[in-house]
Image (cartoon, rainbow, N blue to C red):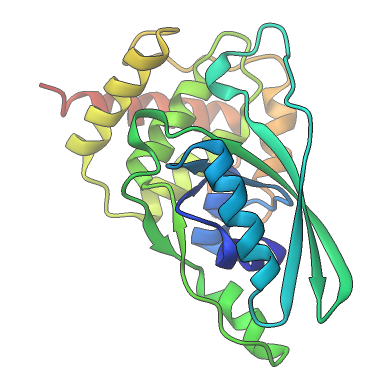
Amino acid sequence: MALVVVGQMLPEGAIKGGSGMALRYGRGTRFTRDLDAARVQPLAKFRSDFEDSLAAGWAGFTGRLIEKAAPRPSGVPRAYVMQPFDVKLDYRGQPWCTVKFELGHNEIGDADEPEYQLAHDLAQLFREVGLEAPNPVRVTRADHQIAQKLHALSEPESERARDLVDLQLLDKGEELDLAQVEATCFRLFEYRRQQAWPPTIVPGDGWARLYEAAVEDLDVLPDVDDAVAWANDFVQRIANYGG
């Protein structure tokens, strides 16, 4: 519920990553406590607007934005380094919970044309406890999510086996325009200049364990080797739409 509440008060931009998946598919995807977003405004403007929105509140919820020091991890591509915050939420003036929030820049326009999504089961949670029904929230368009996940998955020494799960859910759950997906993948791989498009997905050490933890109770392939084979086929399906 906390991700939905924060999503009602976010300024212009798009929710991405695992939190975007959670808002799209609700209980039909892997669980996450964190919220990631991309902004279209300068950082200072986004922060100011978000602070104003949190102070004004939504449906009895208000909040405070606490900026944290940005990490400088060695070996992590700059494209992945996000500005971290804590969002301290109150309900009717009483402390409720803290959401870890990370904010990134508008990479190749991934926040420019968001989709409005909110899984029915998440909206139903609010109705069941007598709260106002939340509005759909802005999430990164599916082609951008796929491009970002394929890039992360195909990095050398990647530990992102969980993205195999998200890619299967996006392929099943969305009416994908594969020509658009291919164009976005090509642009992102060119922009980041790390590995070439189309990539080959190679399972890393520990992927079996990571994948097993991510697939619990979800409608995806149960075996990591089958999921990797599926992902490489998915890449080729997308790449075949290239010019």
